Image 1: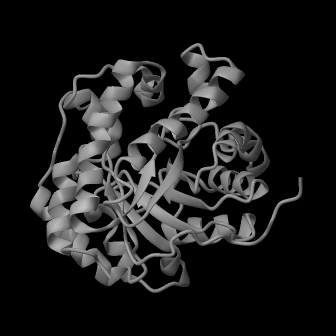
Image 2: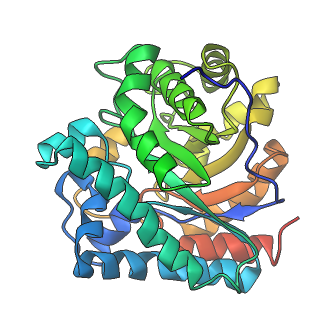
Length: 316
């Protein structure tokens, strides 16, 4: 199948809300045990499905209350081959659980169909390795092949887009974009950065976006930043560059700690919700094209609600 080099812009509305830190909320707030941080296993049983519904429900209610469009991510950040192998899943079982995850969140969305202006279903993709470390880096071609089956699963389940979160080097990002293009699915790429605003591989964010676009014919719908506090990257957004217009989403951490510090932490750092929300308001001045807002590690619906209160109803 030849790659389709036509960018698909999925963000047709002015503003989209999304959720917060799924895995940290499940572990620390709901007492759910997650092997290898793999929330996708909860799709397989009623108790797990109920835990997921309890997690997503307050975010959907916020979207309804403030009349925001919503991007509903599947709990599949770990549902790729290497992590699934550690958990004992066959290739066929992995394809099935990715498809089932889409169907599950779609049932959640249907319950709010008359309350929320628009809900997009996003197939969530995570890195092959550790999101905080750029190790055993793949080529673009290897990454395209590695992520192919998960994206195929999402295509078969008819998602609206795929979103790759916590990527830390360019060639994996470009491979994911190329795999999505083969299925003609809109794709968002979200990089994580260290406290200095650079990717864990040492690349600057601007250069990473430019190189990913160059290696994948600019097919990505948009770029995002996730799993870092706003204090870590707001400084670099004050610089000039066409690459900034490609950033249309931010999912920040609650904590100002570094990735290394978070790795060693045994308790949840919920950070300062007011500080986080205030910074999100300021961020809209640095990123005029910002359209997607949510949280990442350590955030829950209360953090996102604080942001909603700052933005007010129906952000335009």
